[in-house]
Length: 203
Image (cartoon, rainbow, N blue to C red; front, top):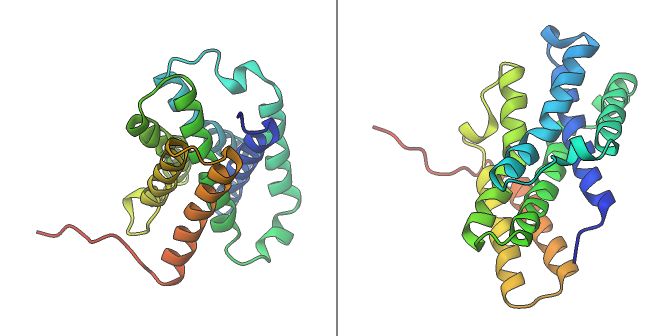
């Protein structure tokens, strides 16, 4: 089963919005170009890298203009509704969590669909989810989340592994999809709430 088209667009919107909101929070990116560029790169970065690795052409955002429209809508939302959005605590965290959960499982599905082995599919699902955020944080002069103590990429790996496992045992595609997304969201929420982190490597 192919995940509905609008779910993919939802992931693009979530990532573009998180990128634009992050840029809005930096004085160096108060102009519309900086906000738009950050939102665009965040939205397409991970998926573009995945598709290049998988040799899938043309890239989705090049083939289908709706991706660019959705990114534009996310940027406009961040510009005109930033005050309303900023009143919601941890907005960027929540939007980013939705984005990585969707992108992870979509990345795994797309990888499996072209015949990639399950382990590589898990890794590519994680790459799909985190690479856009790495570029976003680099552009706004922040240390990327995957290099901090937060459980981030490992949450994506856990959700991707669960999807592959459920798929192997023949669990229904809808249940596999939403269960895997729920696991990623749950791990992120619990890890941040209780400040759970992976062991730190010291000298």
